[in-house]
Length: 132
Image (cartoon, rainbow, N blue to C red; front, side):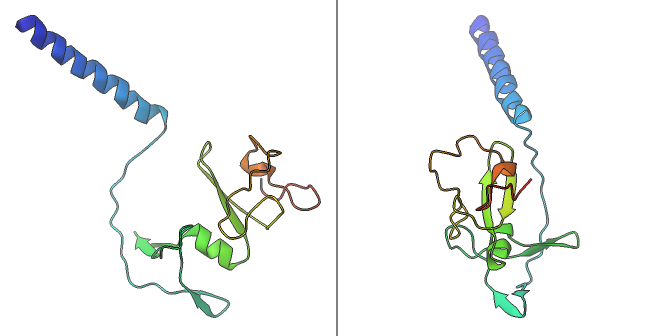
């Protein structure tokens, strides 16, 4: 009975160490924030916009410790830019529209020619990098 209990306890400890190391290896940090939601209005060139995510859901701006946070995609697209996300590097890319980027949702269009491109590899119509 005692050996089963020791084996079980060791299994729990080893499992915790293994799964805990995945979070550390991924560079994930969790923080608790206190955010203020004040019905913040976002205006661009005098016109109020309703910030939305890629799925069309309204995303409300908020304030944390005196800094106002707004959704990058909604603001960038309202300014005529395209936005894409590079999960491998946790990078938001904001760029001028090009043939390889879908203006509606900012996701790269997979034409098979840009596999493995990094954030700095988005090119304009002349083949020049537009985001580095």
